[in-house]
Length: 366
Image 1 (cartoon, rainbow, N blue to C red):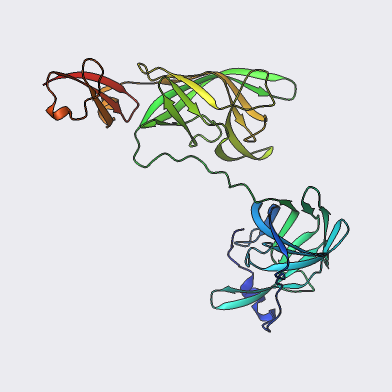
Image 2: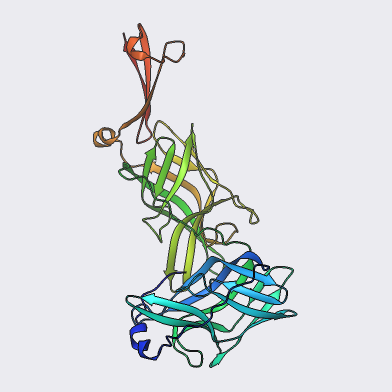
């Protein structure tokens, strides 16, 4: 959970309690497990309330009917709170002391509190079989045990047994890589609620080669700077499904957009995106549907593309001169590898791979 600029702390400093108070620690007999914390974290970085979606690993400890949770306070992420289980409910008393948080040269007491219009205990529903702990009560990191003065607060809190998956990361090509302009064309289909709307589209794209790695920018119109990464293998380029384009906001809400592949009529499985690659023209032709998807592992298309092509716009002298030799192999006329071409005699075939993906051969007479 992020540590945010605490603009409220200076205002509250005069009313903070400085006396030493006891923090919660699970007993050594407790069984500690990883859980994934989800929900929303609201905070006030610069006198403007904003929020982040939560998806992070916290600790939950069980010792008989005592239950402990670590990780609910962003300012003191190692602090624990203690609850008591009664059947399918776990109650955490309000006012538990998280600890002292230091900001600058000052320290501030931080308390665990619930809030439902007033300060209250936090009651979680607990499903032991599926490992689900959830509550609709707001959970507050508070400066007081009796009145609302929150540093940040969590809503829609749910804990799921098991560690959180790694956060989605966007693709970044290596620094200094040479890009080549391409034209992206496809038949786009969008579901409007009344059926599918089809249109032919074209837009600029960029392609960059790094040995057998190939990077494409421009596959997502909503996030035109986003890249995806594939692997060249002969006359095929394969892009792993589920690559993250980034976050996108429109009038309908906030979206996560992913690059995935699909087959016609198949909605229960996603596939890697495969392209046929023409080494003479350097053009790519997709062999499956390409989805701009709202999830990375289930069929939920934002937009769907068929007949996808990436066509190189130019093969000018400037393009060729910009390319760099990445690797070279040497063979004789029978195709046998020559390990030391400098001392070889007769005709040597040099095969060169360039940084733009170009592969060419030439004869060298020794």
